[in-house]
Length: 365
Image 1 (tube, one colour):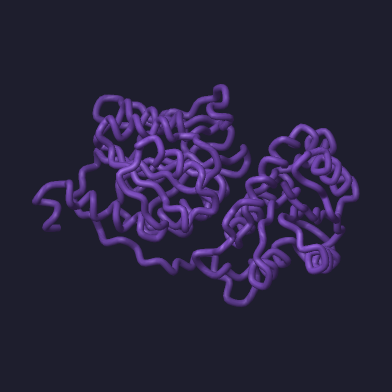
Image 2 (tube, helix red, strand yellow):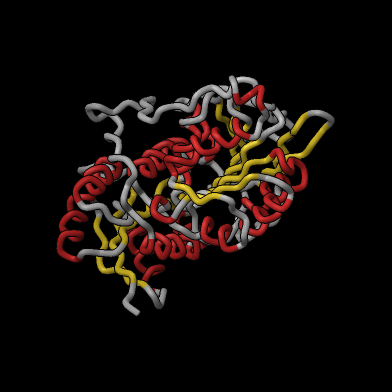
C-alpha cells in the first residue's frame, strides 16, 4: 500500500522536527517535506504533490489562513491545521475549517515538545482521515477575514418558514465529527427562530466549543450557546456539548434539562454522540429527532438505533456531501436511519416532517 505523503508547514523548527519524526514513525505515512513558511510550502506542494499538508496558523511572510484560502481556491487538498490552544487560536481555527481544512490539532502554548508527543496518535489519526476525506466544497470558500467581500454574518442559505405552534416537546439531536463544524452550521442557519430546541455533540477539544457556539450564534436565527449543566432546554435555542465533557438530557417535571458531566471517553470520544443519543432515546423517545452528520468512526450509531426503536425520527447525511462518510454509514448499517439526505436538504425535510406529524391544526399554520 502506498504511504500517505505529508508536507509539514510550520515556522517553528522544533515543531517541524517533531511532526516529521511523528509522521515518519508510522508505517503508512511519510513526511516528504517541511516548510518554514507558506511561500516555501507553495513550491513544495507544486513539486512534490503531497496527499496531506499540516499547516500552522501564525507564520511569517503569509498568514496560514490567507495561504489556506488561496490553496483551497487554486489547488484544493486535504489540510490538517496545527493551531495554538488560545482564544485567538480557536477563532482562527474555526475560520480555517470554514475555508475547507479537514480537521485541526490544538498544540499547547507551552511545553510544545511534550504536548505534541502526547498528541501523536491524534495527529496521525487525523492525517489518515484527511487523506481519505472529500475536499469538494458545497459552497465556494468564503474570503479570508479582512479580505474584500468578507462578511462574518453573511447567510446565503434561505431560512425555513416559521413552524408556528409546533409542540415544544420536540428536540432535535445532532451528532458530528470530522467536517461537522461546517455541516452543523449548514443545518442550524436554515432553522427558523421558532425551531424546536437543538442539542449537539460535535467532537471537539476543550477551548474551542465556546468560540464555535459564539460564531454560530452570530449567524443563526436561533440562539446558539455552549451547554451549561442543569439549564433548561428551550425552543429556539441550540446547545453545544463543551469540549472534553459529555452532554446528555434529562427530564425534570415538564422540563428538559442539559446534563454536562465529566467521565471516561465513550467510543474514544469526550464528548460522545453515543452518550447524547442514548439519553435522547431514554428520556425524549418519540419526541426526538436525530441527525447524524459527517464524521469518522461509529460513535452514536448504536444509540441512534435505540432512538429509532424508541419512536424517534432519524436521518443521516448522504455520502456525496460528507467530508467523511463514517458515522452516517455506520448509523445506516445499524438500521437507525429512516432517511439519507444531502446536507442542504436536511433542514427543509425535517421541517416538513415536523409539520406533517404535528396534526391538522399545525399543518394549516
